[in-house]
Amino acid sequence: MKTLLIAEHDNKALSPQTAKALTAAKQLGPVDLLVMGYECAAVAQQAAQLQGVEKVLLVEHSELTHQLAESCAETILAMASGYTAIVAAATTTGKNTLPRVAAKLDVMQISEVIEVLDASTFKRPIYAGNAIQTVTSNDSIKVLTVRTSNFEATPSGSECSVESLTLDVQAGPSAHISDQLSVSERPELSSAKVIISGGRALGSADKFQEVILPVADKLGAAVGASRAAVDSGYAPNDWQVGQTGKIVSPDLYIACGISGAIQHLAGMKDSKVIVAINNDEEAPIFQVADYGLVADLFVALPELEAKL
Amino acid sequence: MKVLVAVKRVVDYNVKVRVKSDGSGVDLANVKMSINPFDEIAVEEAIRLKESGKATEVVLVSVGSAKSEETLRTGLAMGADRGILVDTDEQTVEPLAVAKILKSVAQSEQADLVILGKQAIDDDCNQTGQMLSALLDWPQGTFASVVDVLSPEKVNVTREVDGGLQTLQLRLPAVVTTDLRLNEPRFASLPNIMKAKKKPVAKLTLSDVGLGDEVLTPRLTVKTTQEPASRQAGIKVGNVAELIEKLKNEAGVL
Ligand SMILES: Cc1cc2nc3c(=O)[nH]c(=O)nc-3n(C[C@H](O)[C@H](O)[C@H](O)COP(=O)(O)OP(=O)(O)OC[C@H]3O[C@@H](n4cnc5c(N)ncnc54)[C@H](O)[C@@H]3O)c2cc1C
Ligand SMILES: Nc1ncnc2c1ncn2[C@@H]1O[C@H](COP(=O)(O)O)[C@@H](O)[C@H]1O
Image (cartoon, rainbow over all chains, first blue to last red; front, side, top):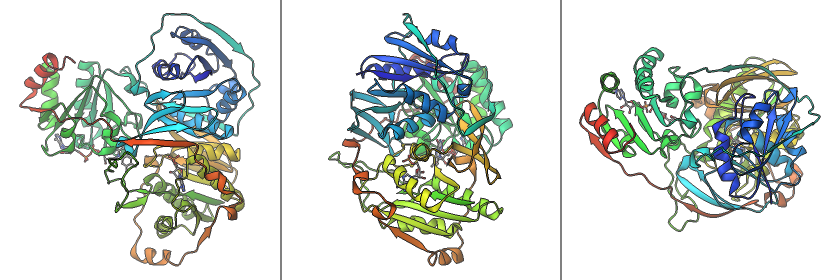
């Protein structure tokens, strides 16, 4: 009964998602952590400090630089024997790779686990979170992705061993061409304590920048957006919150000019405190908001910024 | 180049589903069903490939009950050439089983590209495409926002990832899954809806695709289906000053 947890990282730093996924993984039994990448020994050192990890396995290879699904899945499969569970955070990297591992092991993946009831029984949301299923896996190896917003991070502060493995990783059938990653000084959406999000009502990318960002800066907040705002080009795609975007659960979520479609609510309704600013008092977002302000956001937000 | 598109019949995205009080599942009686929105985007992309002369044929495949024919007709009305229905009756078919069935269809059709949605909005699994790609040993480009077929051997796929965008080059044959911003699906015109009624839809059984019934044996047993914890609506504040005061003193989050 041993679990292999896949670390989330960018070759430089361990993502905070890993410490959260670890909290879920530990409920299944002892955990080894796998760091796959290139020139990422520093990540393995950070991973080794997470409390309760038995050991860190480090596989470095130039073919793993961009963590493409095909070569990552092969790497995981090469070490899968000896583990009864394989776990990753439900990030775009985890979601890309883990179903391949499951298929090759001929098991079903359990996607977006929000609660571990025992080593084979899990809760997961379906229908954009409008229903919660309790499922038992009948497969011999459990492959699961974890919805990290539902788990607290495991703290650092211990030190386990790092085992470096040499693996012959084959070049896969896909090649990395380029990344266009957003660079931002702001906190990351999936781990931010405060998030302010804008919707279609912002009307343009310029207005989005002009009205939302100053408040975000004052609050030290991450910035999110509805699908409508992203589709219209007001905000980049990695800001989308919702069923098919990021799932967040900050202490404070401020929705501005967002109507509250079920697909948007699916991504933020587990936030501790929700504030909605909308000029339509009938907007469905008010049904989940702790504090609703019926107002024109173009007036309310500058005022909020000034008074904070 | 032949393009195969997987389409699933799901509850319409506008419906807020209700959980049955005995915990046995969600109530699907008299609920509006539609093509999975991501699959509609997949169909649109395939048709555009055909219109630009890059694809020669667009074949749709759905796994499910006879009612899934309706879903196939929706895609045929948009402009796909023909459909394949793998009839599994009313049983739930898990993504792993769907992937095995799609693998068999992709091989017998000799598809060069299979396009799926990234996620079915009923089970929210986001795994079938990746599984299919693994079973076929074909490269995958998931969560695509741009699909650029460069030649009969190569396709560039731009993917929506947590940090922004990533572009990959895949050797064909390959599997692609769609994200929302790949394209905006067209509306089918009335004449095209009429024409779609006459387009061929092959009805296959599991044994027609070379699989036995055991492929459908569920790997996951659903114990219960519950309502999520519900959130109570809070209060309305009168102005910005009151909002700040509440957030500071009542909620303690500022
Ligand atoms: C398969 C699928 C997946 C989806 N996934 C997601 C997802 O992950 N995330 C997501 O967000 N959506 C998602 N959607 C889209 C979702 O259904 C809604 O269309 C979208 O969330 C609407 O965005 P919005 O609230 O910004 O826009 P609208 O619904 O147009 O709402 C705009 C709001 O702004 C208010 N407003 C207008 N002017 C002002 C003003 N001056 N001051 C204050 N308020 C104002 C209006 O009253 C209105 O309530 C998905 C849809 C589908 C089909
Ligand atoms: N029963 C099915 N029939 C056809 N395609 C399916 C079926 N189930 C899933 N798919 C395809 O796989 C995608 C992802 O589904 P899922 O992994 O269930 O979220 C969908 O968008 C469809 O393209």
